Length: 157
Ligand code: ADP
Image 1 (cartoon, helix red, strand yellow):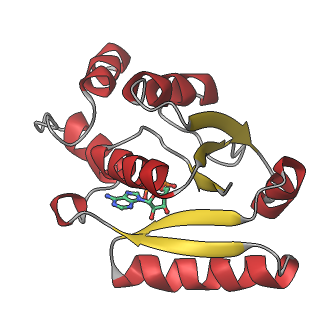
Image 2 (spheres, helix red, strand yellow; image 1 turned 180 degrees about the vertical axis):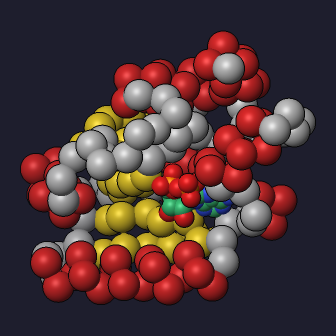
């Protein structure tokens, strides 16, 4: 049985994230979506809200668990006894960053493998930060994030 961890900030979850979650849930026996608690950043949604939005967006997937972590991802993975990290890849700049991260994580723990899943071309330009920026200036973000996210973003304004 192979379990993978899909880590990220998910502030908030987008349809690009959702696509990676659905495809990973099909590929692995179990997927843990691990939401990063980063005290150095001020997110739009706090940790609990981010987890909640993911939960409501994936209610039809029964082999996906949602969890939070802070500190080093590989420490979290060791505690959970999981050794596959899933990352989404959109652009060359994603690649450069993820390449460094993957090699650093392997240096820290050689048992852990990072696997990359290519973005769905429909969402290759999509990031949480771009969605937030478009929304702030009144852009239509329908079909880019789950409806529940749009609802919550409207409440925040
Ligand atoms: P972002 O703000 O870039 O969406 P996250 O930290 O929430 O950042 O991203 C978590 C993971 O999801 C990363 O591996 C990232 O590459 C991936 N990801 C984010 N958006 C997409 C997308 N549209 N298509 C594929 N992968 C994505």
